[in-house]
Amino acid sequence: MPDCPTARLPDCPTARPAPHVLVLRELEGMDERSTAELLGVPEGVVKSRLNRARSSFRKAWTR
Image 1 (cartoon, rainbow, N blue to C red):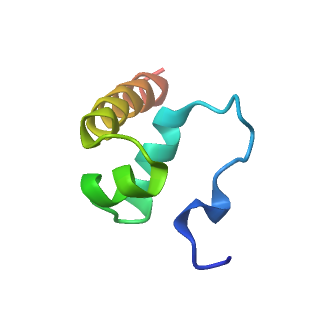
Image 2: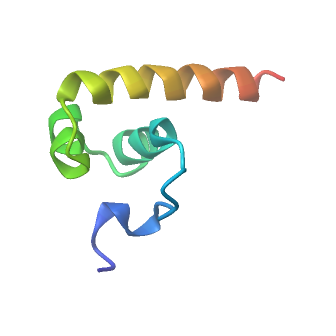
């Protein structure tokens, strides 16, 4: 499924979900509602994971 936004995400069950949300939102251009539907989680979970991923990325970037 090359057109599927999740095709490039790791299939590892232990992969951290926050970076997936960041990729889908910022790189794929999906909104929170669409991301939530795609991942099968509530929209609030997507927003929380997005916040966590952005914070983590920011910390890593400033090191």
